[in-house]
Amino acid sequence: MIQKDTIVALATASGAGAIAVLRVSGDHSISICSNLFRSVSGKNLVDQKTHTIHLGHILDGDRVLDEVLVSLFKGTNSYTGEPTVEISCHGSSYIQQEIIQLLLRNGCRMANAGEFTLRAFINGKLDLSQAEAVADLIAADSEASHQIAMQQMRGGFSTEIKKLRDELLNFASLIELELDFAEEDVEFANRTQFQALVSKITNVLKRLIDSFAVGNVIKNGIPVAIVGEPNVGKSTLLNALLNEDRAIVSDIAGTTRDTIEDEITIGGIGFRFIDTAGIRDTEDVVESIGIKKTFEKIEQAQVVMYLVDSSESTINSLQQLKTEIGKIKNKYPQKPLIVVANKIDLLEASQISSLTTEIKNIHLLSAKQNIGVEELQNKLLDFVNTGVLRNNETVVTNTRHYDALLKALEEIQKVQYGIDHGLSGDLMAIDIRQALYHFGEITGEITSDDLLGNIFANFCIGK
Image (cartoon, rainbow, N blue to C red; front, side):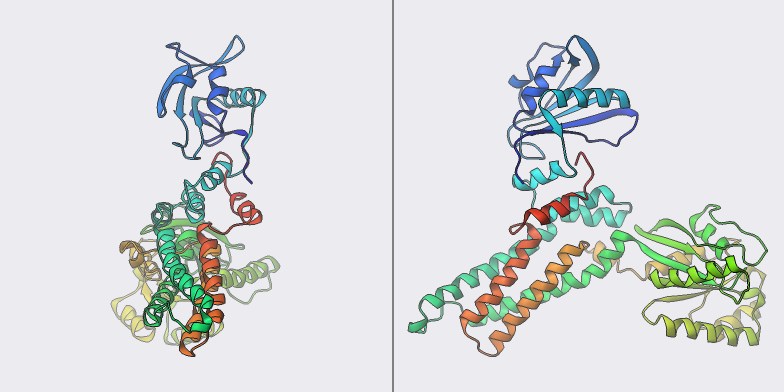
């Protein structure tokens, strides 16, 4: 995994722009760039101090490719923990490729996906959970996902895990020492303190595992299916939520034949709204396919929003609505259901009173008049525990970390069983070592080439 050759990649987004940044890292990065760079002041890059910026030109023989700024990071004082040069050139795609090709001809090779961050991990600049947070930070598309990625990148999560691991490792050493004096029947590990530590670790692990439900939602967004009969205003509501004309709206029932999806951020949390075909009995083949897709999207959604046309509500229709709501709740008992009455601008006060009396917790709005839309957005936020963000608590968003925490908890519970039933130290030592192994998997103290390859393969080139 550890390669000492010098790598290069475009660090900024591909395509034309005002400027582009090329990153070069490796033991020979400064000497290679020095041979291709002519400073306006005549300075040699090799002789300059770290963390300095120099104006000059990149030369291909006698041909000037571009006027650039070169940033130097010497020794281990860089992102990767090895000598690094960053070349800020003009953002022409042609210039970018010409400089990269020049560097490749002079001793560099193209970096693999995530290789700069991989080197940062190998050189001890980041632990593995922090390295993974770099990818999450780049992919963050909401305030909440950005906040969690920043906390993890600063080491909030790994610090908590390392502290637990160090404390457990201390007791593991004492228990292992007891095994060397088995015949003397001595006890180096205080069992009362050990019990307290195991209880503490159990509570912390359960809290982190529980946080994954929130973390996964924040990282990936919440899919919300908007369902109901045809022509109740589902597409109008989608447009109102997105504040744009995303879906076709007409008075003709069955206009939406396929699902339409779009995302917005509410209170820092991403929501993906899915406008589905109206649910009804139909002989139209195309519409039937759309209705089948509607039920597929309900399966995938985390929240179901059932929309009704309040302007057509009668005593009989309200009873039928109760029946339909009951069917959805029975079919999808684990999914939160919001019943929304649209077109309330067409109702009298007595009709609104009747509606709210018959259907508990129904949300009233007019998508066309933008009445009650903001309140609906706030109701959606109630499904996310944003308190963990406000309190700056550690939140787990990574499936690999979640899996390792589950396995660590399983081993700690075995240790607890051993304490409760007075098992010998050698049996408990096996479970403690397994728990330590799973802690080490998270922070990277225990890794394999396959694991690192899988993690960094998902990074973008240049990071």
